[in-house]
Image 1 (cartoon, rainbow, N blue to C red):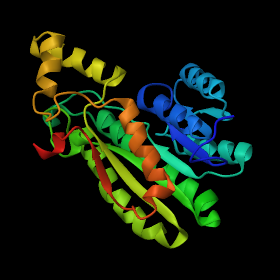
Image 2 (cartoon, rainbow, N blue to C red):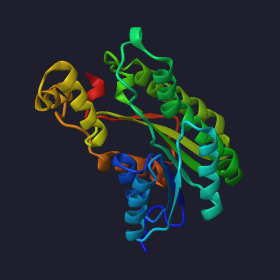
Image 3 (cartoon, rainbow, N blue to C red):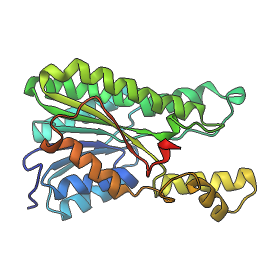
Length: 263
């Protein structure tokens, strides 16, 4: 069995089928945590669960679309039924939405993007707080926002608005639950290596007529460290914020962006 900073604790991670979510699940498992994971594609979360169990950690899975209130309620309930506690909630699930100018925006695209990136994390936090963390008088909640909220791009208003909403949500929630010993922080993530960015690169190449190599070079040109963030780097910051080493940190928006937010 693995041992580490989170022995005996339970981490609930959404969007854990691929990318950052899968890396987060494995990172917490290797540090001794039991892991609950949810995502829309059940075959992908089962792959993550297999890797988590291979790392020696107990794992429970659930099909969960965070845009649906019932799925959020059921995911928290399934986790509590299996483990009896939730110590860390990482609201990682999100979608980019279809790229559209505001003048062309469909209500469905707008609403679905906000539901996945902002409303779902609120619902999960609500459920975890009143069913687990407030009664236990301890816990850690993390939201994953994006530098897209701070440095906007055309055709991404819906995504920027949704991710920006996580910043005041973090601060407000941190104030509301501090008396219960619950800490709340937000990781503001820059360009991250992985499937989501690769799909975005392909879309940009198609719409601009540039090659994918040219698009990638353009995306990192304004980043001081001239590269994308790795999912492992995001996981390292998450582990720190959930640990006792960060006991004095709450209500903060931590940039994990290779300096991009400075430009």
